[in-house]
View 1 (cartoon, rainbow, N blue to C red):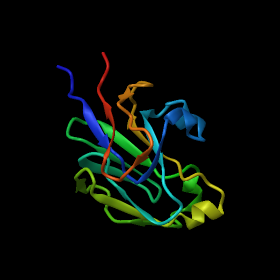
View 2: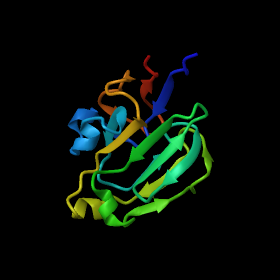
View 3: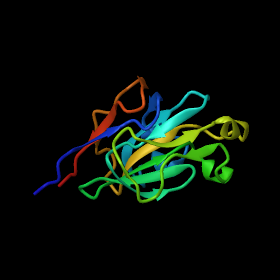
Length: 155
């Protein structure tokens, strides 16, 4: 029996960016998984859960939510933002929390990232999924909580 498809909502508002355009070879090459990215405006913003599930990993700049089907969705806010050691990031949830799609997870003040010259492009990927398996990726501007893409397991 095949797992049902998964609708992934955008964790933040901004401009949708195809993964191959993300300025990081690991994400651009879909080595982590398939999905899309969002580039927010350089002003403070909230980041919400892309799916309902359990927060299994929570870092200042990234988090993973595992849905009821066991699929992990990674949201990585910005590129190289791990180097900020949490500067500009405020966590609004805790590891182990159960969240609904659209529930606030963190608040971001992008000023430290912008000052350091880091990209705010934020990949959202289905972990360990095959390349180019995200479908219906939205184009243009998106609001946090709106459907970003769908994903279904491949045979």
